[in-house]
Length: 150
Length: 150
Length: 83
Length: 83
Image 1 (tube, rainbow over the protein chains, first blue to last red):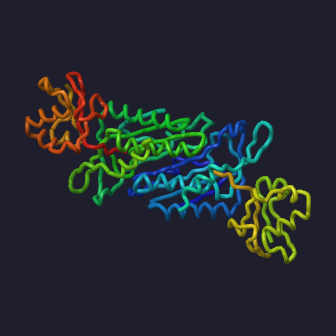
Image 2 (tube, chains in turn blue, cyan, brown, green):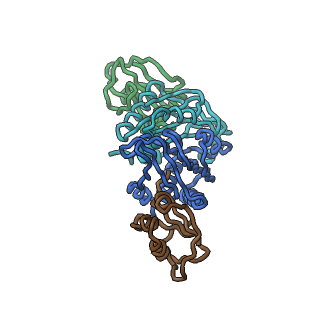
């Protein structure tokens, strides 16, 4: 289990390799990466900046990862989330879950993303051609989180 | 869209990077890798060998990938499946799906794995301490595939 | 009491963080908002619609009627949009 | 007609592929299996329980009563276990 909040870019392939290395119990690894798009809600985006709440961010991400490990039988898990200013195609976030069987890996990885989207204190501001605008939260993200409620 | 069936190892990170590169419409990438475990059904596994049906394998994988692209709005997809003899911790298979939003990426990636598990003509034989044994198919894999039926 | 503002709240108020010393009857985030808004300016504009603003007390999501006191860290921010 | 065997079928029969020329009344995989089993040996052992054996005709999954002919490629194998 590991959570990292950082400004700099990271190497997704190297992170995934390190996550599974030395654990031959792992049969499946599910990894999700979120990337900066150059168009959002119809406007072109030149850069995206993520603001966050230092302290609370780490606490919430650790709690989300711990909850995923409680709900599913995981061999390894990882959340890395960046803040600061990024260009289109850059990686914003990585969630990864490894398990002996694939069902747990898929569910845990998606669970972590869905929770992170509604509970980790990050806020996106887009620089479009016409200045900056704060990204609105989506009802679909709230709905995605709700389906994991027991 | 791309499907590859090969004997040699491949670099998961490099494959994922190449898959999203140059497409700033991609907001999310879901990737699953299946790895060789050193224990299966209680027996230790020293090597795993995958036999396949050349020709039919490629055809089935291409069909599964095409069906995923029909069902979900994907920007990119990839299936790589190895055959031959592998050691624990080696990557057997990679399925990846990229989309503007994460829901499609997760669903398509899992769909491709679930279909591949029941429809791509590969067979695993394990070398345990006591000789070789063919891996039995799992009812759980059949069930995982069934839930995608419309 | 330490108060934090994020995203467009921070922009409207003009600061991200401040130490405040409200009167003794400010015992909830709701009362804190009312006290801040009474100062006018950016606060009034920022807190015009609190239904769109989340509260955290000591880095935990909380309700507007939860208890707060002198040593607490209270944060106001719009719904999160990371990931 | 080209016939292929995979996994433990291949091992029990002892070959992975063969060209066969069955009589004209062998028009389905079921009849092909019966004709092969009549040869005895590995075939009999391999096809002891066809409920556990899948058929593909020209690289498509098929039923045991699907039509087959001279130019076809017929494959027999256990349920797949890749991934």
